[in-house]
Amino acid sequence: MTLSIRNQLPGTVTEVRPGEVMATVRIRLDGGQDLVAAITVEAVEQLGLTPGTSVRALVKSTEISLATSAIEGLSIRNRLPGTIVRLGLGGAMASVKVSVPGGELTAVITKDAAEDLGLFVGSDVIALIKSTEVALATA
Image 1 (cartoon, rainbow, N blue to C red):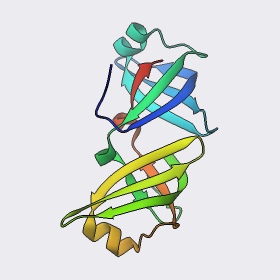
Image 2 (image 1 turned 180 degrees about the vertical axis):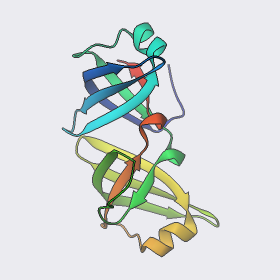
Image 3 (image 1 turned 90 degrees about the horizontal axis):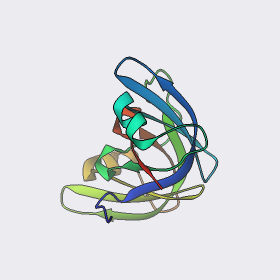
Image 4 (image 1 turned 135 degrees about the vertical axis):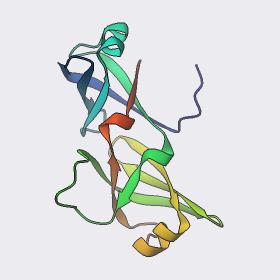
């Protein structure tokens, strides 16, 4: 299957915490970082997710926010530090490719945000991803 989602991070499930409807699934990415996905319990069952299951974490580029330094008091738990390796500025939007351990992420943000943050190739950033925006696919 070919997907338009650019961000496909390989990893292994390390923990599944089921609730009544939703579950949180902790994944150890191949780069060594931990990522949490909040998906339905039904999806956990259909995918057969248990510790040790190989998965790909899928995140649309429009669902990744960027920060230039650590942020306190934020509910977003998925925080992947990296370095900008490509920055494309359009009339209204910017495409930012970030190198993280084990791969790359692409974030699409407004051009104004990129300029306000002073982003440039080589700058360090933190990719912020809400757990509810992480989809999982079995490898």
